[in-house]
Picture (tube, rainbow, N blue to C red):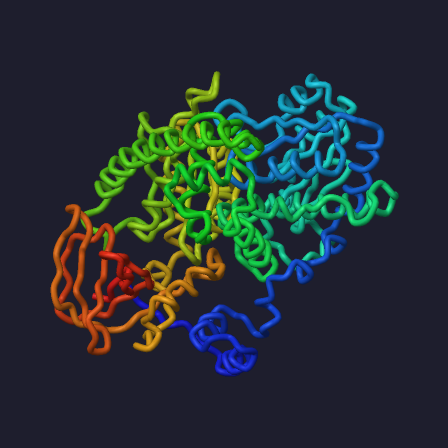
Length: 573
């Protein structure tokens, strides 16, 4: 492990401090690329204009016409938290704006797979719908869109994923309207907006269109009530928190902390034993998001969507409790699979220093709904690109394996799959994804060919420097910043993907150490001569008397007193 200290541009720090920002926050923001205090203004007025998101005007016109004609609308969702929140935002928002007939369909992860397929389009038509709207999917659904259009449906695709490439050229489905910041010709600056954010922007444009048509007296219904859902989906989808995404999340958090949120979110906080009044992005990413995602992984995402849609507090609590139970089951399955996957992976090498450049694991008892999480755990532990496969549960596809992969910085996983497909034609039946996460389907008989093919690409692309685990930190912590009020201030800010939560690093003295709960290392440290408690969750090996640690700040309560403690992330040994 190599602990790295981020560069901090002094001019940016000076500009931020001059604007009245606390020196510690100024340092942290400058290290994350904030150049001007205006980037930190979370006011709704500073959101990027909907008109700059290509397709919003056309989408607004299509939906306004459909509402005026009393047409039936059907949302085709996705089975992750972004897709579920996008679906809930679409239904709630369209109903607020006057749609009388709007419903949804969510694909089954096992039987339907990802995206708008031809059979799903047929189900939408059979439901009596006139307009099909995708959320968080559809940009690569050529057959599904073509089938829908052939059946007489109007199709609006709202998505944020990268466009497909056909023969080296970007290709788009033949939808009536496409809203996606990553489509050609779109000038929208926030290319990392989540699917739920794209749908929220469509609703903003629709309200403006209806206002222009004289449908509303005044400005029309308030859509900011949807921002808690937008914030949850944005954080849970682990998209880069650029300035616009941070504003969306900040506005959602503001309403959650004021307890102004849908009943389902309130109940999810209760089920997760979290305090909504002090909500953080950590709660969205590690408490609420996994409970929504669990439904799509092990059961039916309809449960998650219905939890986000209901306004009945009792019904919301019932659904949230069910989701919590499913998430507990997911954790048990994941734990068993992770242990088995690590055993398989470790059998491939004597120690971590000579691990192969890419890890591929398959077990016939694995559950396809959890392979992505297990791949992420393998990647974290071994610092290698990792793919985990499980048998397909889809009817008639028992001979196929569903795989999910996670990568490390410097290794573009989707491009690697593309090269494997070119070198080994026919092995990859389907694949897609991004730089850091991807999925694929292969025949079971081709597992070893895939494993060797991916390892070969990794051998060619990965260098010793890339394979060295590194952790970017904010350097030493001044003693005067080791205060509970500053810990609370840091927790109040918006942190996440691409805008990492503060992690400090420096050499400390280890006064004493002991195991608690059999798997966590409790520490008594000396930091700059002062005593401070520390905890390293999941660590059992002892530390030397002096060691360079990377740590986050936390406030621990004991007998009514709150004290700062260090949450240890890593050690440079």
